Structure formats: structure tokens, C-alpha cells
Length: 102
Image (cartoon, rainbow, N blue to C red; front, side):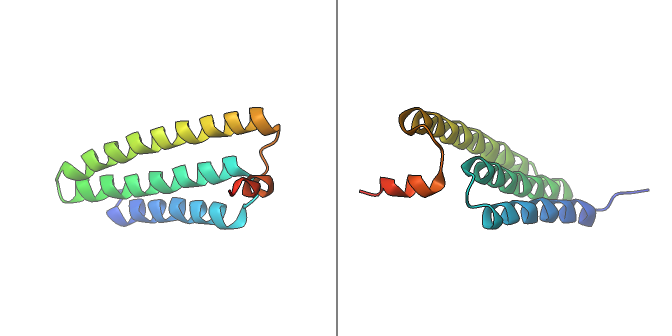
């Protein structure tokens, strides 16, 4: 059985839909929000790789590696900010983060 390109695209669409659902339905937990953003970037990377293989060009795979690098940096910085905020305030509550507006 040959797996076609559409199967991979539907998988990427499904992962992207899960991440959008995580962003829209969960507004209280910031860690879930970060995981949803990472899933979104993963789905985009999967589509880059799928189309790169389909058109036999390596540029899509290079873009996917660059996006993975940026996503890793974003995740590390986001988690570091959360750790610092937790040490200062003692809680990671999104409702109380809104009090940071100057």
C-alpha cells in the first residue's frame, strides 16, 4: 500500500487543528499555550517537508530546519521567562499576568 501525499497533508492539517483548538479553548494555562504554538510550528514544518519531497527540492527541508531552530529558541526563552515570573510572583496565573501592564 502506497501512502499518498494527501495522507500526510491531512495529518499536518489535523495537528494544526489540534493546536488551534489548544489556543482557543485553553486560555488559563500558559504551558498549554506554548505547547500549542509548538504543535502549530510542527505542522507547518511537516507541510514544508512534504512539499519539498513532492517537488524534489531541498529548500523546504532547509526552511523546516530553520523553523525548528527558531521554535526551540522560542520555547527555551518562554519557559525561562515563566520560571523567573514564578520565582518572583509565586504563581503562573494568566489573569494575574495581565496586571503587568504599565
